[in-house]
Amino acid sequence: MPTWLKIGSAAFSILLIGVLVFGAYWVLRLQGNISKASLGAGSDKTEGALDDSRDRMQILILGSDTRDGKNSNYGTSDDATGFGHSDVMMLMDISADNKRVSVVSFPRDLLVDKPKCTDQESKQEFPAQKNVMINEAMSEAGIGCAVDTVNKLTGLEIDHFMMADFNAVKELSNTVGGVEVCISDAVYDPDSKLRLPKGTSTVQGEQALAYLRTRHAFADGGDLGRIRAQQGFLSSLTRKMKDDGTMSNPARMLEIADVVTRNLTIDEGLASIPTLLTVGNRLKNIDVGKVAFVAVPTVPAVSDLNRLQVAEPAASQLFAAMRKDIDLTDPTAPPSPSASPDPSASAEPTPSETAPAYDKALQPVTVANGSGVPARPQEIIQALTAGGFTQLGQLAARPVAATAVYYGAGYEVVAADVAALLGIPATQVLPAAGVAGVQVYLGSDLVGGTGADSAVQLPSDIVNQTAGDVVCQQANPALITR
Image (tube, rainbow, N blue to C red; front, side):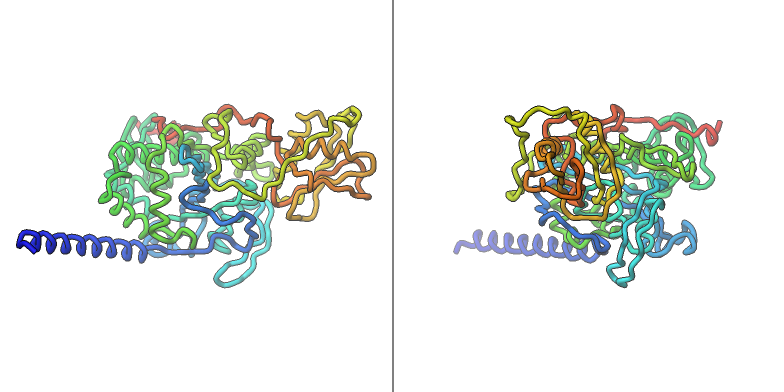
């Protein structure tokens, strides 16, 4: 072998070994940073295995207010220990074709029904509770209980979660060199120590954390103003990372990954560096105009005006659109094609074309809610009303797994038409001697909806902003400084 070739081969070998050692170091370092927890708290999973690179993916993003460890500077252990409360709760929904992302925020003051949860480490059971704040869900039985609670509320089945603490915000904002935010007037919040001048500012470190934590600086000083500010911050961060080419810069991504993984708790299915890289790779080319930020529609709670409850029918419409994988920025667009179609999906029934006509308005139809989702019957009733059925009733029912349409004597044709309208398979339309008329018995599978051909109804202002929008937040008049 010529001398020059020997030298070249040796140099290449040394370079290759260096690359492998460097790569192994970072994989081990990042993997060692990760903290893990269970995805659920005892709920049954009905969906099949997820292909993280090709399937639609839903990730619940949580911000913990725990004062343990690095967060002890922000209060005492009396405020929150362990996992704490979910100071921030957002559901990120990535479409199968990687062309759009929806980020749906849940106000921490939202009152919901929490399911029975079991701490997956101690195996201690916590009973179901009604009308409790959603941010309390993970304080007893862990993060998995927050996941189960959101699943119960929305009718979705979340694939993964990520939970960060106060320190993550500070370190990430420092790593990217600060994030631009805008406010209508100069403001000072003595609780969070947020002080901002009028107009655009760059926040990082403690100031970035104060911006995201403040409960009073924006709008009327409530939770909804804080949500809009948080969404504006994330929009600005998304634009900055996109414009700076961060997502395509391996060195920068390693630096950010190191910061994030040191302050992150994720579910066991997501807890590997290759999986996290796969998710990051899916996000890097998405159009910022297709990253939609939404807040669950709410109104002041009847039981406590200082709390919130879901606003109907807007909340049911949002959750139905999410279950149908609708583009929230353009509800008329067809759903994204699924990368992994379900081969076991049953054909939908079709109404009989030869059966004699009947008056839909006279047919008794009852909706029995065994789904465990309080808002679900309202969505079904809306669909039935739109389809011409107006003699409707609803009742509570024991939980069941599978949705079915039951019918009494003489109502077979009506039951078939109801099932077709709701998209319920013909195999789930059954006679029942004890039923007068037709009964739609909703199960936890959440089959049925507004029908395949029905337009999805959504409030016109359901999207607060996209990541492409530069929004200036309205300051709380009570905290404006001169």
